[in-house]
Amino acid sequence: HFFVNQQVTIGWNDRGLPTIGDYVQVRAGAKVIGDITIGDDVIIGANAVVVKDVPSHSIVVGVPARIIKTRKAMNESWVVASINKELS
Image (cartoon, rainbow, N blue to C red; front, side, top):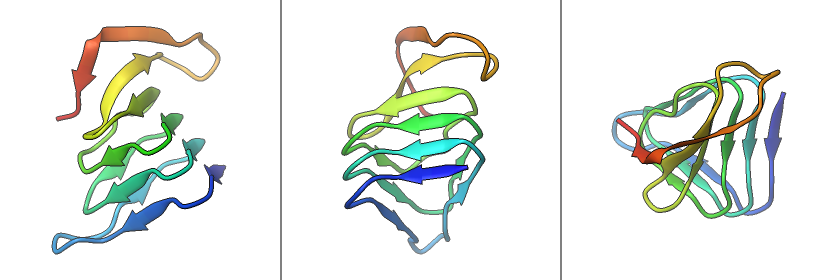
């Protein structure tokens, strides 16, 4: 399952292309660029710019993207991440 809104860019850079997991939502205007991995069960917020790996079970927003919520499994509720955790 992969959900993509309008005006999304999924693109390559000099290092390669993104690898996108299952149950991923990419909201309007977001950019996912380069040789990065987007884990399973991820939501990328509108207009976010993702240039680093995103772990499974995360919600990321912003420029550059940062984690704002996480969960341990798809059947659990989202929990606010500790002070907008940066992607590594």
